Image (tube, rainbow, N blue to C red):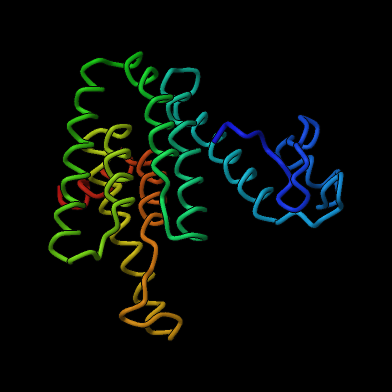
Length: 219
């Protein structure tokens, strides 16, 4: 992910810092490579914009704290895996491993006990998804299992459980819509990573509020 440095996908020219300013460079270059003038995909500024918006939302949620830095790493990983799963039906191990290694120090700085609970939640979430994969005979991919474990590490047991619930709820509703509309058949593969990522982001930002609202319905 670091080497080789960023380059144009058409001409192979190494991109300089001025070519890589999020969102701004795309518009200053009018959506074309500075060197060969090939068109740049809108994917790049949209991903950069989405990541920036999530960073701001995380900061509003946690303020000046180690949790904000950990939340930024978590949000960046969620955006990255969403794009790769939608485009290539794969969640790269490199992204999850890099995110875990970068985020672990900030988790430890928040709380040793919380980090241990996060590790336990990661094992539980990954094990839960593995059980689904076994029962469904491959209905859940290995990347989804690892992503769930990653989410458990960062979110802890309570919020990770909510994240998985939201992922299955949103994914189920989306699946019904795709089937009814005829855009997907029963045997067509649908990437689940984006729903996990969406559930994870929603749970990270508003998890406590969602849990309090839900439990308040029964009290």
